[in-house]
Image 1 (cartoon, rainbow, N blue to C red):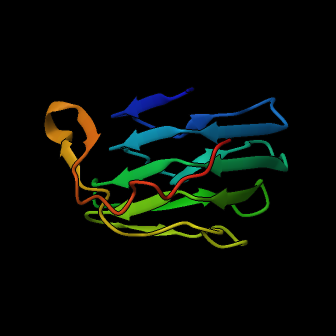
Image 2 (cartoon, rainbow, N blue to C red):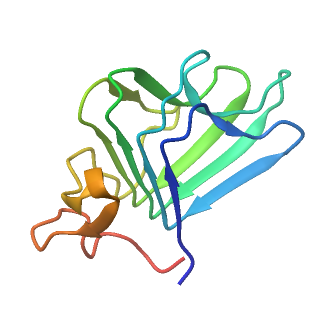
Length: 130
């Protein structure tokens, strides 16, 4: 399967010049976004389409995060986990979507970059085949 890890990114996912961004089977951990504090920012007033499916987004930086910037992106989320150990996530206008949860994914040891899920993780068997 396809998967990606985005760890300790100091900023948002750059999407300038794009019309869409699709994140599937991704784990995003400790993404330290400051201003404009959105994960995906189309920039320049673009109307960026963002799709997040079967992903785990884990915020532990103490900041409040948004999936989209007002007027610059529109997001569709499904079957994903949005967790804030500190700080918070602000749902996109469409909400976190079908099958999504906002509880701790229970990584084996995120601090040592072991993003396997423990046996009791609420994320196990909650995604869909993309």
